[in-house]
Length: 125
Image 1 (spheres, rainbow, N blue to C red):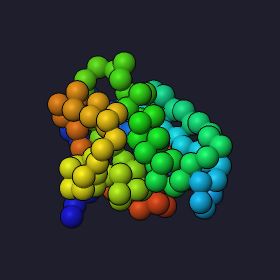
Image 2 (image 1 turned 135 degrees about the horizontal axis):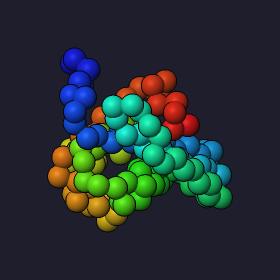
Image 3 (image 1 turned 180 degrees about the horizontal axis):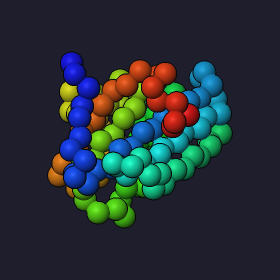
Image 4 (image 1 turned 45 degrees about the vertical axis):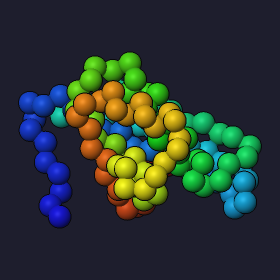
């Protein structure tokens, strides 16, 4: 599959999220970063810590943090990148998801979800 390309005239936000936790509901953290293209200007970056999280919960919280960060922005094209195949597939509707907050994404009429290798998602670590 060829890499996505972007017209330099298009208003676009790229968001990356990540989450991690110790095994069996240990301490965990999650983060998100928002860029505005074409100059890759960092618009927002945030991270949070919780005492008890699973890895999947941390990944979901990272995705929710993305949506919180982009909520006040103009509804331009949005590309969301993450290394959690589960979260990305559920957001695409390929797997059932019952997390109510993820419905917020529907307010962005033009969005894409990209699963990326963990090594390519270091900016959100």
